[in-house]
Each structure stands twice: as C-alpha cells, then as structure tokens.
Image 1 (cartoon, rainbow, N blue to C red):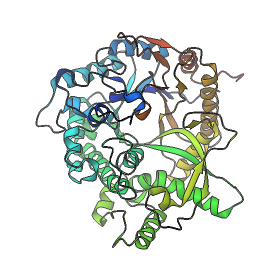
Image 2 (image 1 turned 90 degrees about the vertical axis):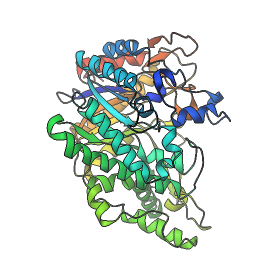
Image 3 (image 1 turned 135 degrees about the horizontal axis):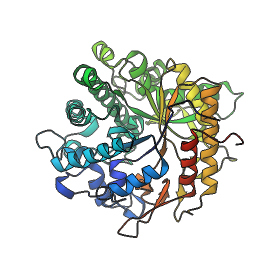
Length: 469
C-alpha cells in the first residue's frame, strides 16, 4: 500500500502551544497570554502556555524528534507578537527573526521542507485592543505582517498557510467567546470575523502573488477545519438537507468565496437573511461582499489545506423560537453515533476523512489537497505504549490510501497533529496529541517517543503501510 512517490509526511505544531518564552527577548503579549493569565477556569486548571514545551529554548530537541521520525515536511507557526511585538512593523524584534531563521535553516539542512503558518490563533494583544477580527482595520495589519514574513523568510519557505482554521477562530473567539477575547456575540460576531478573515487572507494572497511569487515561486493557502457530517437518519430528507446545509455553513462559507467565486454559498445567505428578518434585524447579520471584494477574494488559494479529526451525525432542528446563534441559523443539532469510540470531543471515524476528501475533490474542482492536521488525543496520564491510538492512525492511513487510489483525490501532504504533547487551548495539558510525550512537570521538558512515533517513522520509511495491513 505505497503512497504516490514524493508524498509528504509531516507533523505539525503551533507557536503558542509549544514555544513558551511568553515574554522572552522582547516578545509582545498575544491574546492567549492575557486570556490565560486572567484565570477564571476558562482553561483546564488555569494552565497557561507561558512555558509549554519550552521550544523557544529547546528547538534542538524538537529537531531531534523530527529527524527520528524521518519527516519530509514540518509545519509550524510564527508568533506574530514575537516578530512584531505590537502587531505592526513599527518595531521589529530581531531575536524573533533569528529564532525562526534557525528553525527554517536547520530544517532545510536536514532535508525537511517547512510549511509555515503566519497566524495560529495568537493575535497580538495590541491588535485585539483595537477590535481584533471584528474590526476591518485588521485586514491592513494582517497584510503588512504577511508581507513582512514573505520578505523575511520567503527566500526559503515555499509553502505558506496564512490563517489557521479561520472557521474555528471566527466562531470560538467572536461568536461563542470560548477563545480570547472571551466575549460572546451570539449570531453576529462569528460572521463579522469571517468577513474580515476572508478579506485579510485574500489581500495577503494578492500581496504574495504580485510582489513575491515570481522570485520566490511558493504557494499560499489558508487552512480550514472540517468535521465530516452525515444525516442522522439517511432516509429522512430533512436530515439529508440539514447535513448538506451544515457542511455548507461549516466549510463552504469560507472555501466557496476563496476557491470558487468570491461569495458565500446561497443557502448561507438565504438562511441568515430570513432568520435575521424574523428576529427584527434591518438587514442580514452576515455582512455582504461588494462586487469588487468578490473579484478580489475569488481564486486566492494555491492548494486546499484541511484539518480533519472527527465526524458527527446531523438532525434537522427547526429554529421555531427564532433564537440567535450559528447552530440556530443552520437549524441543526449534531451528535455522535453511540457506537463510536472517543477521547474527549474526538470520536474515531476514519472513514469520515475519505468522504471529506471526496467532497472537497468534487466541490472544488479536484484541487491539490494538504491535510495540515489530523490526530488522536490521549487523556493524561498517557501510556507510552499507545497501541490503541496507533490503530486509529493506521485505519486513517488506509482510508487516505483508498481516497488516493480509488477516488483519485489529489492528496499530496499529511501532517500529524502533533509532533509534541502541548497546550491544547481550553483543555490545557490534559489532552495529549503528541507523537512524543512531554513531561510538563520536569523543567527540562524531556521528549520521549510514544509507540505511535516509532510506527509513524516506519510508515514514512516505507512511504505507506506494509502490504499485509
């Protein structure tokens, strides 16, 4: 079961989740620094990323892990506020540039291709104080930051992700308020943030296209989170329609403007407009793109980056009372099949990834696809011999193989989440996704391979699963 020649085998991390050094060497505060320091049990046991895996000082240890696995690619993110402490190019932190230069140069020296994310949830607090993603001013700030990164690192970095999981960020940060700044705006904030995130991504893609592409010859996209969604009752027309509507709101709301035609899906526009009207709003709660903006947004991605973890069942749930909220706009409820195994929110459904990849192929004109995150957590304390977890990975690779061979999906890179156990946002250190175990009680933060790491290294060596599997 060999994967195509040249297939990319990677692991991923993100700056706030692994680096630590939250105020080291001139780094400015990001929103997660402020949010976690405020306490209030919004994060498991009030844990913070102040030290995390200590990767800011322990990069050499991370590199050893990367080499041990034999990765072909490594995905990591830049800390915006480590490079630009107040989010603007008014002050540039050379120590931040030095840190990322070393990572990039060391990777290339070892034959590993960097995939670099500009922004993975850790907005500089200075920009959040000016309205964050609810303010259109952020578009200009992001574009300037992106140009700074392209010009500083783009001579060596050829694969860029502008924004990580823009569809999660908009909802978690600005609608539900579970991520910083922690203030909910039910039914309005998520759409306003989405409107600005899409335009910021598109602007930065155009900056790359016009100013850097000719010389640097790289590729730029954004990554989107996707849960595969199935009708709870496959024989119910209303459940079938609800499942289609759910994937449209969840994935296509971002992907259709960027990959197809610069505008939101019709069902998204009509659902929100009719709900808004019923609720007495003078216009739709979803801000509209102008014709000029649609032209600017259309076609602003060079590959499709998707992050898959799990699947849910969808049931139609009419919003009779006209309640405010994104789920209420979609008119659904979602839940797992009781037979699925789970750790926390991740129900193990390997076949879901194949269906998702086929959906992306069919909906988005057979694009080059990167899976920029996929993985399975273990609850703390996690056994080093994680044979059960490896079985989930193995089943996933079988489904990816089928997607490539049978469905002819153009999947080119797979990134396991994560290289290391790390700070998993609201779950703190209680949820361990690493291929390498990190002891957060030990100041040296030693990295020790799980069985999964040793097995993944074999897959990479063989470029696929051994035939008898």
